[in-house]
Each structure stands twice: as structure tokens, then as C-alpha cells.
Amino acid sequence: MMPLFIALFILCMTVSVSSAETLKQVLLAKQIPITSFQESELNQNVQSLAAIHNETVFLAYNAEPFVGPIHLAAYDRKSDAMLRSDLQVDRTDVCYRGAVEVSFVAEFILLSTSVSPSAECLFVLDDKLQRRQTLYGFSPVEVAPEQIVIIEDMIHFAPVHPERLQLADLRSGATEELYPPKNDLLRAELAREHAKHMPSEQTCARMNDPCEPDEFDEDISMLGTDGKGRFALIASRSASHATKEEEPLETVAAQTVLYIYQRDRDGWRYCQEKIDDSVIERLRSAPNPLDHAAARCTPNLPVIPDMSCPQLNTTLSWINQRNTDRRMAEVLNVGTSQPALNLCSPREKPTKPLSSNQVCTLKRKHASKSVADQFDPALWIQTDPLPQICHHL
Image 1 (cartoon, rainbow, N blue to C red):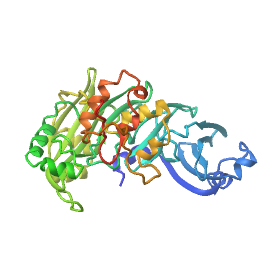
Image 2: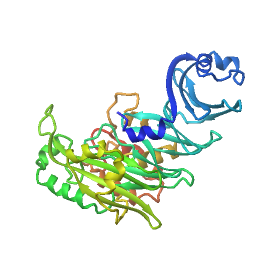
Image 3: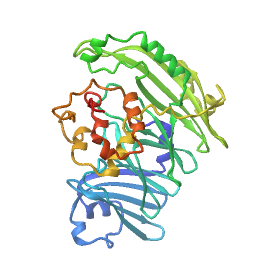
Image 4: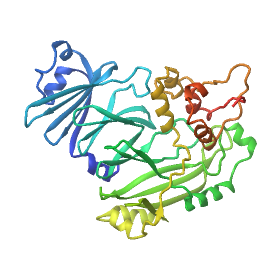
């Protein structure tokens, strides 16, 4: 269920999704004049997403079954002006999907396509319906003027799902990671507790479990924001393992932490406090959850990104820049049931699966070189087991 505070930012418009209708039917239902469209377009079956923001009706649609590009239209009911554009997405691009969600921040339109249950592409459009940038994440929330935070994309079929929070400046296009911050004392505390309950090395190998103390599930639940550079979130972290096939995971260490973020002239700062369910209930039921949360601690620690692998976000950027082929979709498990590919050659023996931290170390090491020349990018997004790197690396 969408958190209430997110709804506060995107429910200024009405959103509807439809499929198996002709474009003409969609336009008439949304009271958009059909005179700006060709007859051949009007008779086409489409999948569409519509939203009303202020006096403008926004429409994104594509042929059904899906064929790109994504067509965009914005009709200003007050001035009777129509604006149209096409969002070109290459067929080999993992973002080559139909639109699933739209929201509005200032003059920007945020249009999402679904990659997997744990990943979306977020197209940032300007008021002329032109693409400004593509972000790789979901659940956007405006935390400062023209600045949003998103949950970074993750590999869906992975042993752990550590959510990461990315800040994006819609005007400049700059991005930075805000959560988790580097040298987070409470995350380190959980990692130490996790290390005390680690399965044996043999069990880890048999279960395709990374068994890394600092790798565990992390769920981010936003608590509130003032939209001016201050927000609060709750991070629920749990480390779980199974020792036998078909055995349910057992949680061996868990922690719930409240974070307050505040931007000042020197950048972002944060504070943190461990909380329990009773505190969460009181905070969520308060008339102003952000103010109640902010009273518990004062942000005084500088936010330094820990660069502990945003799991999929950087990978998707590389993939889209290099227009890789259909194998990317297969490895991502998009529209296919095929398992992850073993990309080592017959003469190269795969090593054991690497942890996400090890993979990120390799990514940083070769970041200045051509990824296409150094590795097949699919190495970074194998989903089952974790990425296998060949011995020659």
C-alpha cells in the first residue's frame, strides 16, 4: 500500500490506466479533443495511462500489444491547447515497457515503466514533454523544491533486498545517494550481531547465500517531509537465513531505526535512533509525524554515501548507455523464465558467487574504462545465483 505521505504529493491529480481500448475511446473518455489525431491512430488499440493535474489532462499510451515509442499528449482544458510528443525507447532497452505510473513535481512530469517487481525506469519530462533524464528507481517524493528521493532499483531474484535512497535534482540532473550513510553506527551494530549467527560456509555455498554480515534486507518507509529540505524515514533491517531447501528463512538479527535528514548550506545531515513498534505507532498516528519524529534527534552527522552497491541502479545506467541486447532482459528475468546466464567461456571456470560489495568494488575499479570492452554488463545483473566473475578477472 502506498504510504500516506507519498499520496499527499501525487494525489493532486487523478490517474487511470486502461488497456484493450482504441485511442479514440480513451480520448473521448478523458474528454480530450480527437481533432489533433489521425484516423489511423484513433482506431488503434492502445494501453494508456491518464492523469489530471490542475487543468491539464496528461496521457501516455502505446500500441497494444506493446510497441514503442510511448506517445505523450497534454491537453490544457483552460486554454484548449494540445501538446504532443513521442518518448523514444530503444527496443533493446530494459525501459522498453508500457507506462505504469505518473506524478508531477513543479513543472516536471515523472513517468514510470515497470522493469520487474523491484525495478522501474523513471523518465523525467519537462513541461514540453521532452525527456530531461532517466532515473532508475520508484516511489518518488519531493523533499526539497524540484528535488526528489527515490528507492533505487534492485535485483528482484536476489538473496537480499537492501533498499537504497537516491536524491535527484530535477533541474540540474545531479543525483546522490542519501541512504545508507557511510559509517552508520547502527548498521554496523546489526552487522556485528548478524556475524554471530552466520551459517557454515558449506551451508552458504549450498544455499547460494552470500553470508556477508553487512548484507541484509532493508525496507525504507518514509514518514514525512516538509518539501523544503527536511524529511524522516524508518529503516527496517533484518538478516535471515535458511539451512535447508524449502525451509523458510529464519530471522537471526533485526533492527528498526528512525532517521531524520536535514539539508543546510554545507549539504545533507542526519541523525538516527533505534525505535520499536510502539514508537512507530505513535509517530504514524501523530497529527504531524515529521515534527514528532524531529523532536527525537537533531541532524548533526554529515551524509557521506557509503557506495555499498545500489544493486541495480548503476548497472541499468550502463546498460542503457550501451544499448545492450535481449540478453539483458533475460538476465533481468523480464518477460522470460530463463535462468541467469553463465557468461564465462568454456575454458574459464566460474568462481563462487561474489557478494554485492565485491561486485561494487570491481565496478568502481573499472568505472573509468569502457564497460563494453572490459566485461559483458550482464555480469552485474545475474539474478540466480549472485554475479559470477570469471577467474581471468
